Image (cartoon, rainbow over the protein chains, first blue to last red):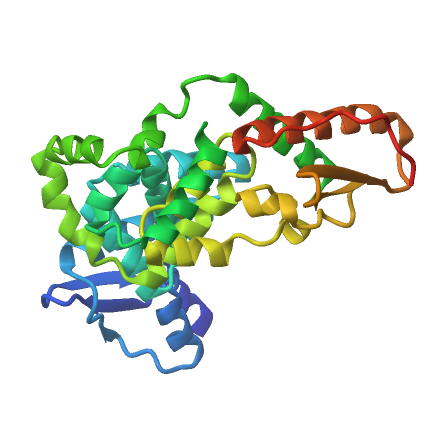
Length: 163
Length: 182
């Protein structure tokens, strides 16, 4: 009797973003956030959870990601079809501007969502890979702070790698 | 690291030498300051908008991202990206030098220092280069492990190609000597 009510009544959590927007998510989605899963396992999860480091814009995206992953994994489709589906979804999901990508990466780290963290890190890495050193410096707003001796070592490595 | 990946490293190395001009994209970064100034001024305004956010990226996240670059670029020429990242600034260099492990552990050639490091222990051929300061020559020593002997010939050839290619990059002249036996 009690098990049937558990099945029909899905547990819901309310997640509050930094800017005060409240999102309602089902437990299957919430457990994808490792921080919340730990709270649930430790029996410390309250239905209302404040997330101080994530804005509503980013939290909406994170929930969309977790929802899709939770649904695909429990959808009953074969593993290969589910994998394909997730791959396509991930590719499209990463088609956002760089600033959002960075915030997503930081949010995935904060909320401890391993797959999203891996995905964003890999996407960021591929952005760096295709750029020149000058572009990378500009992008990260870093100065060339090498001393003359260090610069010499860097140039030597460049000759080794790029000539 | 497997023998196959060592071979891939070598093939990549060889390929990078033969593909002339492939360095144009990243390579110009350190050539001249005047060139750099021209490049800087041509950056678009969208880059200027993006830069503040990237600049505030926490160092531990940057480390995670750089680790992904190091892990994904195992063979040459793509591994040049790892070398490029180590040339951005001091902190990037520090992170990259920390991430890249020695040749013995990783079986990957990355920085020129790799040539002076002992090779991986579990591969078919162990090799190292010794410098003879008295007559400015380098000696390449090979040590054969017990293994599948039919692989030895291509393996030795690949090793020689790799080191000859690398030596050209570094301006070292190799002198062929009759084979010696240890």
